[in-house]
Structure formats: structure tokens, C-alpha cells
Image 1 (cartoon, rainbow, N blue to C red):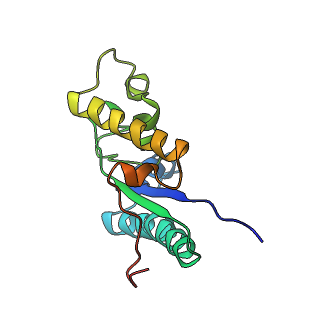
Image 2 (spheres, rainbow, N blue to C red):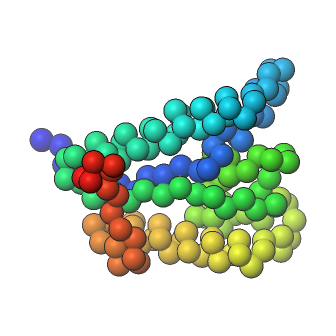
Length: 144
């Protein structure tokens, strides 16, 4: 029998912003509707399915959606909260992306500090760390 561990899972609001670069490099572009569909099918639904499957097995799950769109993390105008951009908050590396010293805003620094605290709480106590920070466990639309 496999023992499933607690799960922290999420996605960013505009995951497709990262993939727009590779599409552009091949001479393709996607309209807003196509980007929304890609975001939904490849990321939002995928995290929902995984979270619901774990909850159905009695596993504690915390799910997030990240919206932090900071100017010094833009890949290009309108890239938004693209795939992987929350990692800069977790690891405190946003200034490394821009290459500009002291380019973080106060809100960005506060967001990064909060992410670091949350991830550390989960890593040190996967069962209760996030609940102790006030996060509620994930419940899918069926109430599970």
C-alpha cells in the first residue's frame, strides 16, 4: 500500500505567458481565447484533478493560485504570472531575473517573505504547517 503524503499544489494566473515565447520563436501566436483554454486545460484543471484525487483518498491538500505580476519579472509586456514565476517568490530570486539591484517593490518583498514562510511551514510540518498559518485545506466542488 502506498502512503500518500500531504500536497501543496497550485498554478499561476497566466501560465501560458511563458509558452508564448516559444510559440513566437516558431512564428506562431495565440489569441486570448486560445491562451485561456491552454491555461485552463494544461494547468488549472490539472491541479484541480490532482487535488481532488488526493482529497478523495483522505490526503490533506492545500491549493493556491498565484496572481503576483511584478514589472521586474516580465519576460515581455503582458507575460503576466507565467509558468514558474512564483518560484522567484519562494526562493527570493526576483532581482536575479531582472538583473537590476534593488528592483523589487515593497509589495514584492512582502510577497516573497510570505511565500518563503508558507513553503517552510509546509516543508517542516506537511500535516499542519499551512493550517497553522491560517490556510484551509482544499475542498473540491463536491465538498470533499
